[in-house]
Image (cartoon, rainbow, N blue to C red; front, side, top):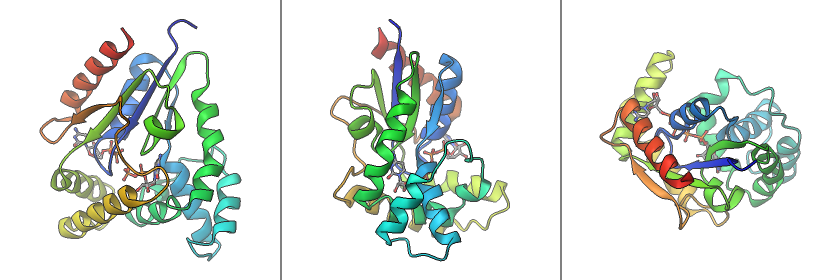
Length: 211
Ligand code: CDP
Ligand code: CDP
């Protein structure tokens, strides 16, 4: 496949990377994987069994048992699960367990779009296009508050802002695959962009990158 296109999208919580990844995947007709769901589902499995989030053996077993088909759960998108996901995501053994699954997903003839924290740095270092999506913590908290309110979840802005900052800190400070742009990533700040504006900017980055 001459035109094989792997697009790696990384960025902090609520930067808009999932929305961009979905839109780009639809535009180019590529499969999309929201890799955050892998960590969310791992955490969810542990919580359901009443196990601790830092129980390495159980967490690795939960990660190993994941299947990409049972990921439609609204529950995985809750605030609590985002927080829990970032705890299991800091375990190097869990990350190692999930590498192959993600690389296999990206290894199709036509390519794929993956979004997460370490796609450009660890999972798909050879991706043709890498975008690091950012936005101010305040904008991200506003977006997440609106999103949660829309789903009927309790959404106090100050609490969400504190959550977002705490998760940024944990994801950036961990020793394995910390949140950071790959050297060859293009950074896209969406603080002042709505979804259409962000999509247009991302499309321009992809078109330039694949040319
Ligand atoms: O959508 P949001 O950015 O809030 O969360 P997510 O992408 O679903 O990720 C939830 C958590 O999983 C993050 O805070 C990270 O700790 C972890 N994660 C990761 O470590 N590596 C990835 N590739 C994706 C998510
Ligand atoms: O995947 P990630 O956590 O980075 O963010 P998302 O789920 O794509 O976006 C979080 C929320 O912000 C969603 O409700 C989006 O509709 C909204 N959003 C926005 O208002 N403006 C943007 N430029 C991007 C996303």
